[in-house]
Amino acid sequence: MIEDIRKSYELGELTEDEAGDDPIALLRRWLETAVEANLIEPNAMCLATVDEQGNPDARFVLLRGLDDEGLVFYTNGNSAKGRQLAHRPYATLVFWWGALERQIRIRGRITQVGDAEADAYFARRPRGHQLAAWVSPQSESIPSREWLEQRAAEVEREFEGRPVPRPPYWTGYRLIPDSIEFWQGRRNRLHDRLLFTRQPDGLWARVRLAP
Image (tube, rainbow, N blue to C red; front, side, top):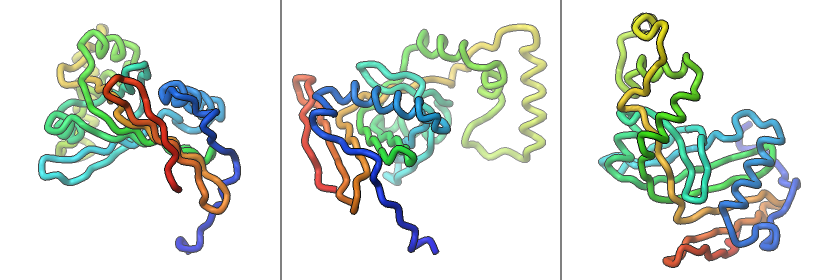
């Protein structure tokens, strides 16, 4: 039964020497390891937000950019998450790589990317994905699957033979981290947890947390 499922975490450890002083550099290294391990969508991350009533919400999105400023993902700005981020531009992102016994939890402020950055990414998307951005009124109620497929056919005809522009409501968001926690599973639930917190001078403070 579900309550009897157990796993012993024994694949690795996370020391202060290994982590270093730069959590963005460590995040990049862990992402590279996840990619090299051929995990399914290693860039998938859970995005947690709150709505206007203060109720929590969460869903998975895909990391599409990582720089020294933060982590970038793209979505329909009219979707539930887009509206929630407009109301309260703070969020948490969580990576979970079970095969590596690793988790990263990132909290921070959300900013919207510029039009040029969003246009450049949209232009690289497969054409079918570009068309879908025009088809779907994301998070809204629709009559049926047939309605969606009919709408897809209409949009395909509309843009036949020409490039698909980015919809004005389709945009990107950058989470600028305030804190990043790295978790490495260890034997007997004595896991390694290192928390980095951004200081007023822009540098990072690192502490070890009890598992």
